[in-house]
Image 1: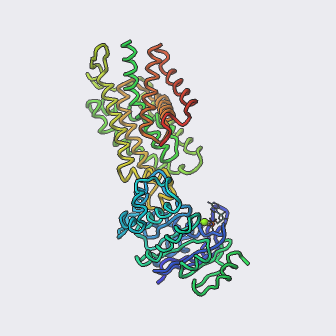
Image 2 (image 1 turned 60 degrees about the vertical axis):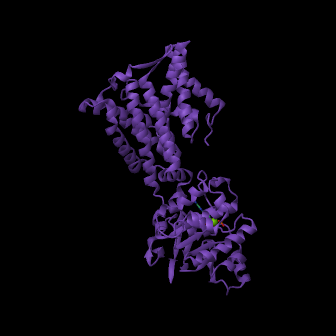
Image 3 (image 1 turned 30 degrees about the vertical axis):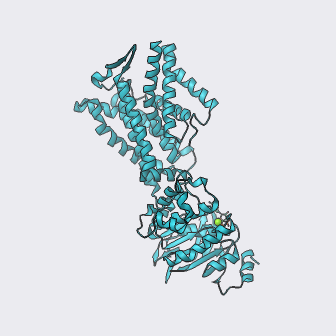
Length: 232
Length: 286
Ligand SMILES: Nc1ncnc2c1ncn2[C@@H]1O[C@H](COP(=O)(O)OP(=O)(O)OP(=O)(O)O)[C@@H](O)[C@H]1O
Ligand SMILES: [Mg+2]
């Protein structure tokens, strides 16, 4: 069942067009990866879905409802939560307070600070620390936990591994199937092609604002994807 | 000697009130990054409202807060929601121009209604009663003002760190974009911040209206005090604001002790010295 879709999505920053006719689709229970080089438009795509960049109403549908251009706070209230690029924790709030901010969308469900601490036990001991006093990996866990506190149906995850130690990346990758089993579908932006293919069911490769390759992750040849990535 | 001690104590006590002037300005800047040039005139508006309520209804001046506070909260919320929200997140100039415009409208509106006469709120006997300790006498009214100031600053601290709205305000101050992505309606949050700031202004407006007389043109001098306190105390720390208020109050009292004409001047000199020595304020924001 299709959960979230874009149809010929264009996105602009003032006069500058960042996306050209992008169509992607996320099924319930699926993990979709978005790959592409720097400046390709991956973040812009996630922001268009999250109501962070203004787009046409019909260009985005969620549960068969057109939601393009909805204000960000409305989109998350529908169940589309974000782990933003660069984590962007609230730096003067404690870890616990950062997590609680995830509840501002007032969606009910099973996620709470306790269930986030079950998922990432290291955060338990850091509860009172400020967001700015954490390592990159810890910040990423808080950013994920904060998004989960919204009890989302869809998680938009920008830059899963960027700047993180390999062991942490492994830990975080292992949580994705766990989340999927709890009913969270995901769109994940990941720069590492091999990892993107490993963790996802379906991949879109984006270059200069256009999709230039897509397919089932286990059917695409690594070399084809790598070529698409570099635009050759 | 005891006269000096007396003036310094007096300076500390009025300093609490100065801290309240500044707390609202600092809150609004902290959350919205808006320097509210109408801050002083909004305080004076509160004073006139208290004056009107007491003279029309014949109630005790202290009771006027029952009218002043809800009115100020509503006024703050509406100004933010209807006007200032349109300038948030632009560059620094639009909010300055808009709040400057609001200041002029308030000043001239008050002049039309109340003329340029001096007004003062009358709190009754408490204004002249004092407590005697040896050679030192402290007015009960000053003590009341100081206690109110401390209580309100403690209350603001409590709201900031122990309540949901406080958490949302701090998060929005950190990163309004991400706050919105988490589900916060930032337009509403900004308006609530302004309403809280205006309630604090309303309390200080009532207290100061009995401390000294005021006219429709008193706003800018209140704004100047608030500015100096914020700079002395450093942005971002509520207790720093209190220290800033006390410093300014004591400096003024000391100047006035040396020569009554130097009171304001001494405050400005203290402000400039601290600005030069500690540009980020005595308390660097936590
Ligand atoms: N706020 C902005 N204002 C103007 N242009 C922007 C803005 N954000 C991004 N862009 C431009 O839009 C294009 C797409 O950027 P986007 O951030 O979506 O790329 P990305 O694929 O996420 O890149 P990266 O891998 O570096 O994160 C780039 O050319 C970028 O310069
Ligand atoms: Mg990006």
